[in-house]
Every structure is written in C-alpha cells, then in structure tokens.
Length: 77
Picture: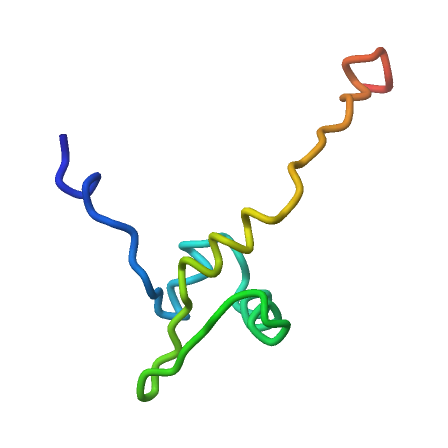
C-alpha cells in the first residue's frame, strides 16, 4: 500500500491547482465564489479555494440522466 493513499485531502487548494483538483475551470471557480456557492480566501498574495465548500456544492448538483444511445436502437451509424 502506498503512503499517499492515507494522505487526507487538503482543506485549502491554491487557485492555480484547483482546476486540476476539482475539474472546474478557473473562471467557473471565480463565478461560483462570486455567487456565494463556494468559498475562496486570500492569504497574502495567494488565493486559496476551500475544498469543503467545493465538495458541498458539487454534492448539491443533480445526478446525470443518460439518454438512450440512438446507435444502439438501430439509428444511423
């Protein structure tokens, strides 16, 4: 077992890393913060994204409802 599997998720993620961590663009993160849906803080010159607030926001989103695949139903290939 590798040691990184026991490493807890960071509480705050630096903004430059946040798109990789959360799968959201930098501009989407700024919009969510402006709308009060996630929390960002400033520490000197660094902007940090509150990971718990992003996880909480993502948990409120509805589940994706897949559409039937037309090609499996004899549609055009």
